[in-house]
Image (cartoon, rainbow, N blue to C red; front, top):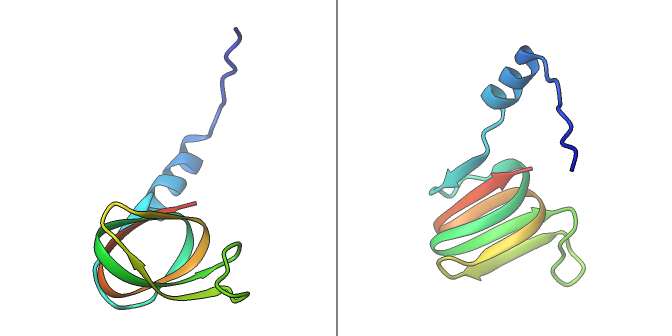
Length: 92
C-alpha cells in the first residue's frame, strides 16, 4: 500500500480553518445562509430549507419540515430557517 503525502502551504491551511467553521449550531429564527451538507436536529425542530438538490413538490424551498431530535437531512443546502428547536448545520 502506498500513501501519498499532500503539501499544503501553511497560510492556505490557516485561511480554511479560520474563515470557514466546520458547523454552526442554530438556535434562533434568523435565516442562516451558506453551503451545508447535513443538518442534524439537536432538539425537535420545525425547519425551512432552500437546497440545490432537494425538492418539495418540485420547489427548492422546503417549508416547515418537522424534524425529531437526532434526525438528519443531507444534500446541498443553502439556507436554513428555524421556526422552533435547535439544529447543527455542517458546512461543505
